[in-house]
Amino acid sequence: MFCPLLLDAEKYNPDTLNLSDDAAVRGYWFQCFRDLVKKFTIQARKSENESDDACMRSQRFQEDFLEKMNSLGESTENGEPITIRTLLDLNEMCLRRHGFSDPWRDQKILENKTALRMLRLRFEEVDKLRDNERWIELVRGLLAGNMFDWGAQAVCEILEGNSSFGLNEALSYIQPRPWLIDGLDEWLARLQKPAHKCAAIFVDNSGFDIILGILPFARELLRRKTKVILCANSEPALADITYNELKEVMSSCCDECSILREAYATERLLILPNGQSGPCLNLKSLPPELCQAMTYHETDLLVVEGMGRALHTNLYAKFTCDTLKLAVVKNKWWANRLGGDTFSVICKFESAI
Image 1 (cartoon, one colour):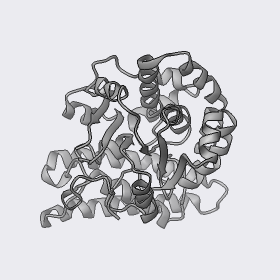
Image 2 (cartoon, rainbow, N blue to C red):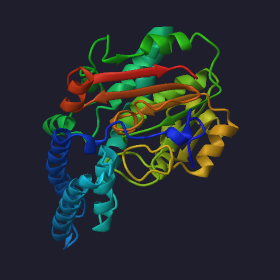
Image 3 (cartoon, rainbow, N blue to C red):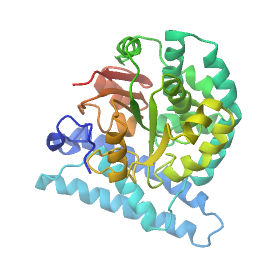
């Protein structure tokens, strides 16, 4: 179903960039995916190293992906659109086809456990701050959490080179303001007005991102008596947290905080699947249950997080409610195209239309 918050559902196009329009741009992104698929192949093989045929299947996955991507490149002559979402979805489809349903499963479990140990301390840190200072730190923390992205080449190099890289280290990568797209002051001004009735937050990565970035932000909304719907992937994609995984980890998070525990028990904090099986967000294909919940709870704030959901898709999408789009631009080409550098910040707030 179409998201009920879209301003014009019929004209909605999830994709920010059509690779079919420019051969040079298409060539750049195809090469990016040729490089990435090598890492994905290694990850797939490692995820099932006890399987006798994991090496063979991972190689077949790589060959299958490259063949299909090249075929897509040839189809541009017929006017068929190709987008970054197309290629990311193709990657997930090929992984599943060759028996790799969740290559980042063990990594997600490890990062969730690590982040959980730090959650109470993070709550204590933000609780020492007041008013705007607290909200600024919560937004910075959400952005820092979004640094933990195994689908971004620039971040993979950092994470692979520093096994102790944590939230404080990630915070040091968040550039000083003014940011590339800086709507933080507008967001802070909106917070001076009556609280939102309900916020739908489309979440991204497991571990530090969801636990130390999103949950403290959601907790502060709950303090304002705003209901929160956490919308997580229906199926695994890269290291993104899934609906089932988020439900499982939430009980442990609630043990660390009475605000979360009470809100979750009284259904002021909800977790719902978003219908997606890839790392981007197509708001044409949400589950009826989620659309109905958005309407029933009178959702008047939409938060979209991460490059896949707020940059590759939905950067220019318009909504009938207040919208906050947050991402760290972890790709140099994208950053340059938008007028910034790698690790530039998108903090785009748009008032209800």
